[in-house]
Length: 170
Image 1 (cartoon, helix red, strand yellow):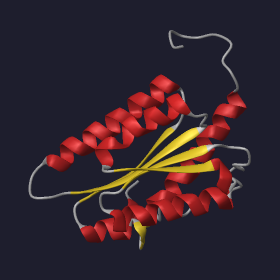
Image 2 (cartoon, one colour; image 1 turned 180 degrees about the horizontal axis):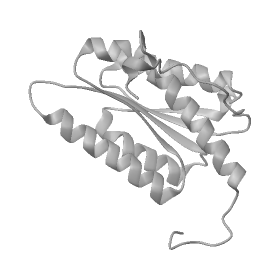
Image 3 (cartoon, helix red, strand yellow; image 1 turned 45 degrees about the vertical axis):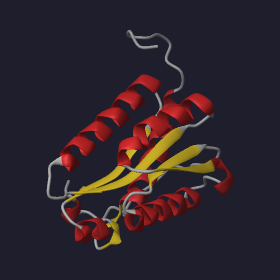
C-alpha cells in the first residue's frame, strides 16, 4: 500500500519488545531526514518495551553501507534484529536506482542468510518534500514502521522456536 494511503506511524497491536536486543544502523547522508527516522525508531522501540540499554545505534556514511554494517553487527554482537535506516533522494542521474537496488538486495540476502530480521527502513523518494513527509510529516515516520516490523518479526521467530529439521538452509 502506498504511503499516500497509509500513515507510516500508525500500527495496531504490537507485541512487547521486552528482552529484545535491537541494533539500528543509520546513514549520515541526508542526516536531516535520517535523524528523524532514528528518533522515530528509537522512541517506538522504547514504547513497546525494548530498554534503552538494549538498543545500539551505529552510524555509516551513506545508504550503500547499511548492509555491510548490518553484517558486521551480526558477526560481532548478539542481536535479535537490525534496523537499517537511510534516505536516497532521486537526483539528476539514475544513481539512486543503483543504490536503492543494491541496498534492498543486500539487506534481503543478509536477512535470508543470517536467519535474522534485517529491516529495510530506507526512504527512496523523488524529492526532499517526499522525504520530509515520510520522516515525521504528513505520512508519518518510516522509522516507526521499521521498529514495529523488527519487534513483530523477532516475536514471530521466538514463537516459532528452533526448527526441528532443515530444508537445505543452515
